Image 1 (cartoon, rainbow, N blue to C red):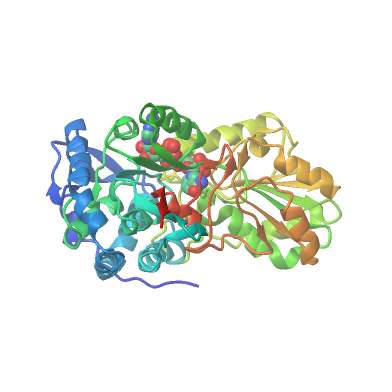
Image 2 (image 1 turned 135 degrees about the horizontal axis):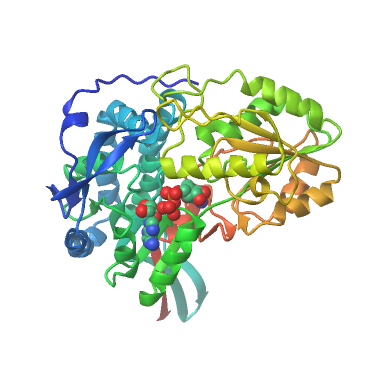
Length: 484
Ligand code: NAD
């Protein structure tokens, strides 16, 4: 459902300089870097490029604030988080527009829900507690399990959901008593910088700093002795660097990484009825979600008809600027990703694979617009099936045998998500249970919630976000053994 927003583009929110938020202060940087609107390919803002010294100050600010913040009661921290949510809500419409400008996503169907969900997430997480647990008790002895905050947590985030994915880290880290330094992706720093500025007016100094800059700030955080944990979301390749670097100080690391999610349409599926859900699961958000459908396996008995119907549906969707309310699929976020997708396309063409929709890029058009591209039954070992495309190209692959398709779905270094679709729910659940992934949906996709663990198996990640399990990862378990 479309979600309305109203905003003027020439207010201070868009024209005032963007500040680093460091230890409670809004700080300008000596140098900046360009931020590009992917719908135009043009620079539309300058973000501050923090120096290594400024990152040091942010970490030191988090360290100085930690003791006082951790000593507050849960209820006191909850009221601070609620004040932060209220302050974000007061800037909701501007945040939505800024998110579209820096990220490209459609405003009503993607940016507004992202901002709204983030605000709601903070309020919900603020109510969650990790109680002390009695794990053993006898007449003269008791063992309690406490969860204590870690210290300064570093959040490193990607460019696909810059608001949601970082606030998914901020809320549970802060409610558990940690302080945090957020480093947004250099492709999409602006919304994080603005929420950092907003946070400084409601949170105690040093509790939440936001520091933008180029990629070298990330290694500084992952190696830093005063950062207790890195909560990272990004690619598997960068995740490996993060883990290697964090090993030096035995940091806690949560890593939400890449995926190559399979959707399996079972032989008994009402396949025509689910095409819209499958289409948006693959092409919604320009295919730029970690848990997007990246391989669509369809039973051979109706594969040909499925492809025709899928393409007919896809033709009804408009690609264009995310600020245009009639647009369903926006531009790809950045040139690097756009060029990577062109590489997939070149490989598909060089290998004579069948493109049934899209596949032609208009080089004269400004912005990073990639057409909705459907590849009909490429071989299992092709690049588009084996690698994470992270963009609007999807292969629709025929299969004959359910056991075989489960094996193909599992034959991947990734294990993030997946989905199974069929009339017989029990049969679909049985297949879902065989998928080697952290999350699997049955006859629905991309539903989530604050109490629903989210994370990947294999090289898709380490640890989990959300749920009790995710919140506990922002703490140290501490066992207290007492002789009564
Ligand atoms: P990326 O790995 O290129 O960058 C992520 C962040 O890491 C950025 O902030 C970047 O500046 C920083 N970084 C770069 N080098 C670093 C280093 N050596 N040390 C520390 N930090 C460093 O990822 P991206 O291209 O921004 O995002 C796309 C990827 O993220 C895709 O693979 C996607 O599947 C994945 N992703 C995963 C999830 C999930 O929850 N599993 C969610 C969204 C995106």
